[in-house]
Length: 139
Image (cartoon, rainbow, N blue to C red; front, side, top):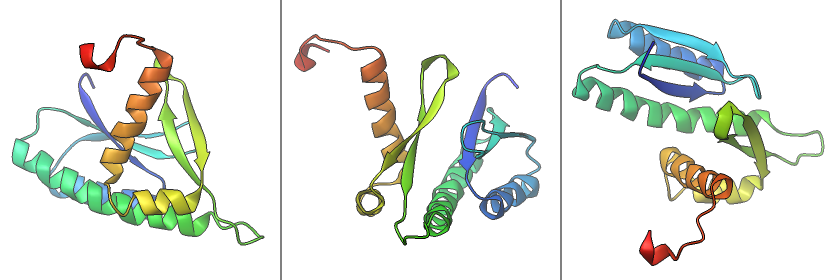
């Protein structure tokens, strides 16, 4: 696949729901398992009708919330403390997870979407990896 869109899932059940939608629309996809945390990555070739992409993106947003809820529910420790993490894609293809306070993460996700959160985090990662000391008003 040359140009692709990637959809990331942390639970098989939720990924299967998205896969079912892909099958309904006869879309070819590749499935990979991400190396850091074993997440399921579905890669779909670009070039699909814009209305269909909108439908898939809306479905992904819905499923991402359910996926996150299942992950959070499954990350309970024996001492009843839950954990949360933010997946970080670094330059050169490196990947890592930043552990964050689950209560803070939950509060943030009540006011912004997962996509907005990912965009925000990606901006911070890029700014750390390639610092720009120029005044912000001149960028």
